[in-house]
Image (cartoon, rainbow, N blue to C red; front, side):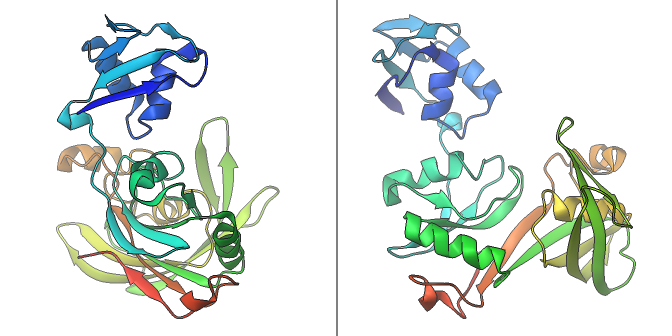
Length: 272
């Protein structure tokens, strides 16, 4: 696929390409340039060079660099409900991928880059404000499904602990007792199947903390298969799993302020 654009500001070519193609990792941006797929001011380049605002760039995107397909579950004049692919940032990349069909979009909540599944995006500021109020009031219920290593403490129950963020390391740790700076995290769960040393678990979070499900399951002794941050690294290698097996599969609106009050009682699920 060929694409042409005008650089929006001074800086490095890699930054301009990242803004234009936010679904590409830093590694893929480097490969795009080193593979001589970019022309800048009419000349082919093979290294990260400085660009100036107004510079014209032409890019050949190999098929493997195209944005992943995104299934749209529902859309209307106010919202889009999409099934986010893996390796996709929910704040920058997903709205950019959907922009050609829906215009500017604003995610009302987030999923980790490697977590797939349902995410709700607003098509305007009024809709975004209404969705954010509903999430804060906890009148939006979410369901996730995970594959975890080991056996859960019981067939069903509640995971309850306190999470502490380490911003410098980009990690979250769990504790059983409250402490300064910790926030409570609560998740109901139900084991739906077991086999081959794995458990298949449905998860219903009551709170929406950073990395909540991944940390809570690891704290319970059943890390998510493929999780490269909180998982069982040896088991991930043995099974050849490098992407966390966590998926947001459903969302239900109990109530939403105007102008989205018509969503009350609506439920959306990913395709099986």
